[in-house]
Image 1 (cartoon, rainbow, N blue to C red):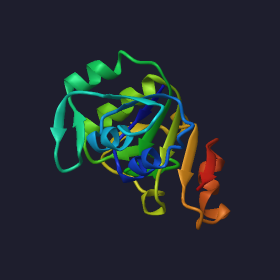
Image 2 (image 1 turned 90 degrees about the vertical axis):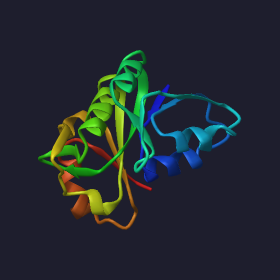
Image 3 (image 1 turned 180 degrees about the vertical axis):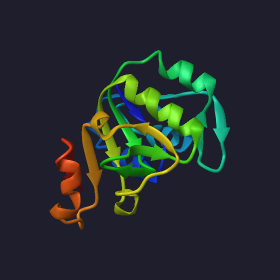
Length: 159
């Protein structure tokens, strides 16, 4: 079972799931649910809540209540800002609560991000860097640039 957060990078992961993937995807993003609707082996659960149209994500108390009913193997988080000292952060209190709930209900956490979101922080802190197991980012980054993350214990994967 996997939580798929919102964001364009997480949507790309959904779009590129191999047909051999077998499992349950729980998402807060209607676009991810639509993307996986035709996947031959994915069971898709879309959570309810208030739709934030600008971000195409559901959030709020209903979403949080539903999230707490699942224990996921992994959470794939879209990343707004990730800093080795400040941790994972976002600009929205609702998004902060949703991401924190996914982290709390997951055995492993994978942050997926583009380079422009690394070494940045936003007002609403989601978690310490230690709560994240893996960081997936672009191939063009140097190992030196990523050293701050590997030193903090993250398994960095350049895709």
